[in-house]
Image (tube, rainbow, N blue to C red):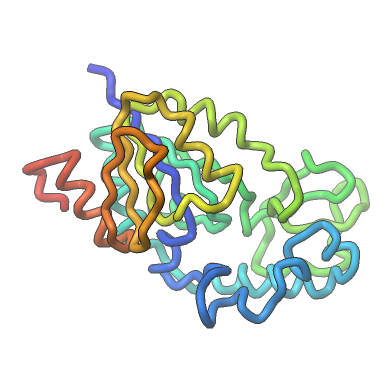
Length: 234
């Protein structure tokens, strides 16, 4: 029997419980920076040193944290569903937990790419990217991150995957950041959509929606109880 496809749209909330700062957090890593100074192409041209320092800090933090129970719950679901994760997160916590299909919409923190040819992508050895670190073409390497104002190259593929869903799960994202927030609209109209978020999320435009108003770790337990009743996993 063919497994049902569970498409997961994940965001910063699932990683926050592992200790990764989000740019909306009070006291979080982003609070000390203006986004326009560290996360735009203009910022890179204006002050490369500051941008490099900012992402080096984020990368160093990533090496100090670990996946949490919400990440592991998604791995457990692969025993029962064809799970496809589409994440706005640039960390690798889904992969480190063991998820086998992860699409990163906004890039990957542990990767860098050429400023001369964006197809040249490398996995960074360690946490530090420095001025003078160059690609095979001799050009400066930059973070492999989709900055504000840049196109999201994976969005079309992500929309196609969402369109094949039998179940959609939104966890850790309040559906505020576009174009990623619009992905749920590509799900077939008849499929159930579950949203896990501690905040109140506007859902009037989403048919067949169930909201679990909890943080990711607690909400995933409730989700498991719903889709796998009697399994004892929740």
